Image 1 (cartoon, rainbow, N blue to C red):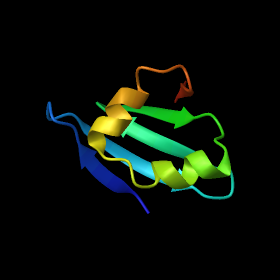
Image 2 (cartoon, helix red, strand yellow):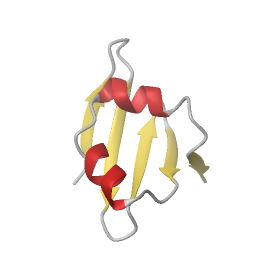
Image 3 (cartoon, rainbow, N blue to C red):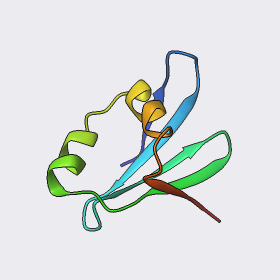
Length: 67
């Protein structure tokens, strides 16, 4: 189930969880990203993140660009 979130600056981020792999697919500004696999606890917590949380996540190196 894809959720569309908006950051405080107006950036739109579409978030799709993959429960079996414990990853998220993120789409923002026409680019597709995927998180590296998360621990069960971190994944469950990230299900409730808002747009600003995901925007902060983009400052880490725990994701990669998908072609």
